[in-house]
Image 1 (tube, one colour):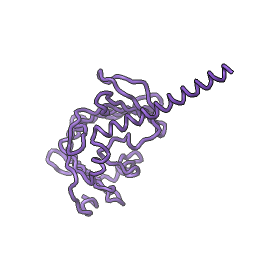
Image 2 (cartoon, rainbow, N blue to C red; image 1 turned 60 degrees about the vertical axis):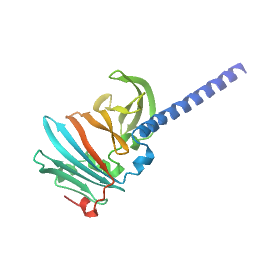
Image 3 (cartoon, helix red, strand yellow; image 1 turned 90 degrees about the vertical axis):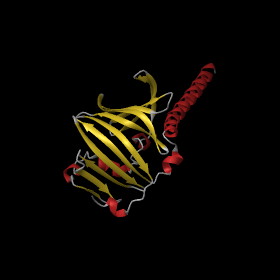
Image 4 (cartoon, rainbow, N blue to C red; image 1 turned 90 degrees about the horizontal axis):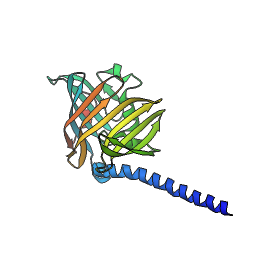
Length: 229
């Protein structure tokens, strides 16, 4: 009888602990959504235009990104003379570009963006599921909550500042090796949304820095704007 009581106590303990972990996991994501603007404000965004500078291997490029709901986008990559180096345009049905060789790659990020219909200003964490909570860690002396998700054999780790609730860093791990990581710096309010003005990414092949200059919301675009250059 005493053994049965102990088992019941242990069962109740693990049940409540598991429930608390699950609840805490999604509370972290909800807190992050709240501090970047909240669901209502983000749902009110029907379109946006983001201007950013991409730095890579000593070179800089200006990128103009346009998005319109339910799911249309256009990215234009320019050099210093504002000449078009590449463009990618999706009108809701077909993807067009002057870089078809890039689009044919199975790893082309545009194919995944279209498949998942990602809203570009939202972090990919909102497109994952089945999170687990890991032990708290520090990032540059800042105490962080850590969440983990897995997809296609890759472990994705997300580090959230426990005080501000902002996402500070992501890591991608494959077979025990760190293959990508991203840092999110200097959050700033653009309209009703808060967004990192600088994103530093390190991949197996390169290091990239994105600096957002401005974001404009809810402008009207003709359908033809997303059908090509």
